Image (cartoon, rainbow, N blue to C red; front, top):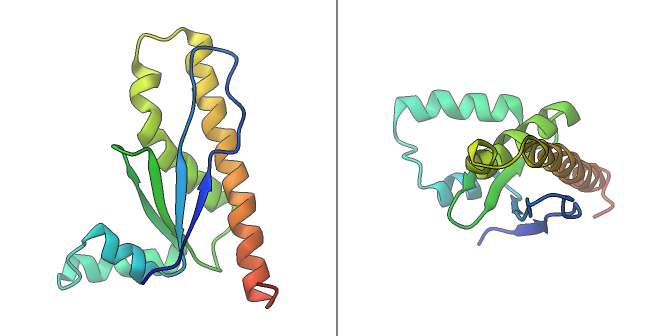
Length: 137
């Protein structure tokens, strides 16, 4: 069974009409996450895609129905890449709200939330990963 760490949203609510909520489901291994995603690992296309996952040291997807991000972050991922990755996945969850009938200020608050939450999760994930590599966890 996969070991999964769940990290809820860490950022306070925005001052506007936007109320953000998302959870990060962090998997210990890429294989566990691939199994959850139900990807067909027998294809040549997957084999090529898997090489990219291993090189970049992160992969995941957004669960739009439940407002969850399912992710794996390996030990070689850079902080900038992890922040970008989380921002990308969070954007999948909140783009409809950005494109909706909100004011410019509320749309900007959504972008601000995505940036802040991505940084908060990246700090937690990279700190945990460094601790694991150093034998602290």
